Amino acid sequence: IKNRYTLQWGSLADPFCPIEQKLKIGLELLKFFREIEYPVSFSTKGIFFVYDKNYRKFIQNAKNFHFKVSIISLDKEKCKKIEKGAPTPEERLAVIKELKKLKVGGITLRLRPIIWGLTEKSYKELIKKAVKNGIDSISTEFLCLDTRSTIVTKINLEKLYDIVGWNLADIYKYSAKTKSGYLRFINTIKLNFFYKLKEI
Image 1 (cartoon, rainbow, N blue to C red):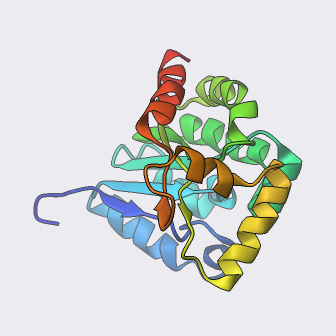
Image 2: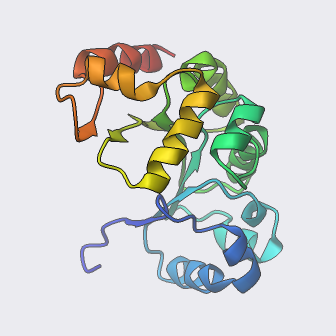
């Protein structure tokens, strides 16, 4: 705090979720961080805050606030199944446009996680739309698979495989450095994709 390191707000929990819309506890913090001009980076899939005058009041012209808007694909139907309860990709693209109008400190497209079988089908169009709406950067990473997952997680992964059309675990085991545990794609596969992102 003394050195004013940026506070990361959101990622595993959303700062602008329906609970916040009801209780408005985050609004109190938003006001406080604006008053002391503390640097905050928000990660969100939320949309209500850019249309609510109470939130807009503290967001507008806040150069100390940076927003990362999470969108993994433009496929509305598949996103609806994967990101249950979240606004549509188009609604989140509209948030980027509103944040640009509000002149915040920065806007990032949070293109993460990249899910093979879904993201690569529309990422070029998604980035172009996000740029047009006002982003100045992209944050990205590939989905990682944990083969040591709980029963609930395994059930959810099976649902994910059905949605994307193939068993991601087989692909990860084929291309990952390790064949069990926490699986990641090897760097060569990721690098090829990142070069494409950089080119766009």
